[in-house]
Length: 229
Image (cartoon, rainbow, N blue to C red):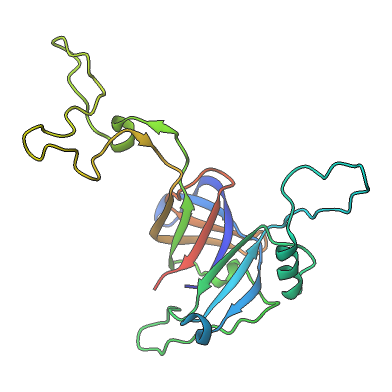
């Protein structure tokens, strides 16, 4: 589904005829089309969009240390030049086009995009529903109470195992720990997609999209906003 790459700025509120509405603000600068994927090759039509920019490695003289930090490699530089860009995008993501939504009773029409075009927030309209993909906040190693919301044990009558998971595998049957048992472990930092988020406002001049509700990820986190059939 056609969409755009942006970053989550945070949450705020707006006031409409329906009252006070909590919204997530996403900033999405115009995304250049860096590649067009043909159906004959991929089995479906899609475009690759770029976002942000990377630093380039500069020619260092003999004896000098290489510049610190990650720099764009030769393959990334060549890919950007082939797309006609004078900079190297920091993020590349592909979006399918063959499932582009249309109104009821209308024939589906794939939008025509070519290398050199740009996609901005103007592709979205107030009132339509979108799906947003982001990476949730990483919370490290956590127990079952925080990780899964398990209630834990009683806090009185001499109990000392308030937040422990309890029995994880009976000894008689099945005499083992079942696969997928909810156990302590790494919590967060996973890909999450929120669906049916309503577009409340679109600011094309400032490249902002206001989405009703919450979106996974921290402030300045990368998000993908896609149209929804």
